[in-house]
Image 1 (cartoon, one colour):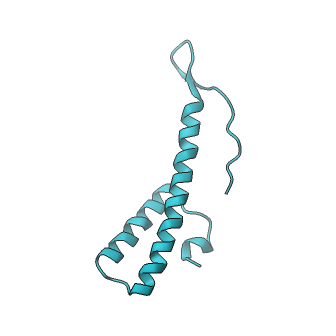
Image 2 (tube, rainbow, N blue to C red):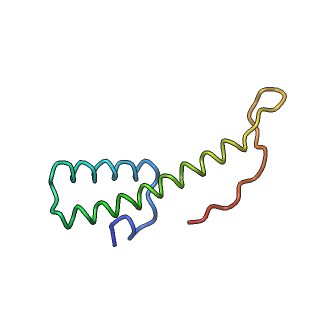
Amino acid sequence: MTKMADKQKPTFEEAMARLEQIVSEIEEGKVTLEKSIDRYAEGISLVKQCRSILDQAEQKIQLLSKSESGELSPAGELPEAED
């Protein structure tokens, strides 16, 4: 289990920063092959989480519509996100 899985899920920004760190470690050869595989698996999990966060953000944006006065207002309700 990764350090990220031991606590609550990271924010989008935290996940992206960790992904950058993982890529850097692997590209620079700072970790062994075995650890590279572990980091790769962690990275895949982080990518999935980032995609989920972005999908939710896109849904929220799509629910916004301009009112007659030109201001943004909610056009509906989002379903609860599955974790």
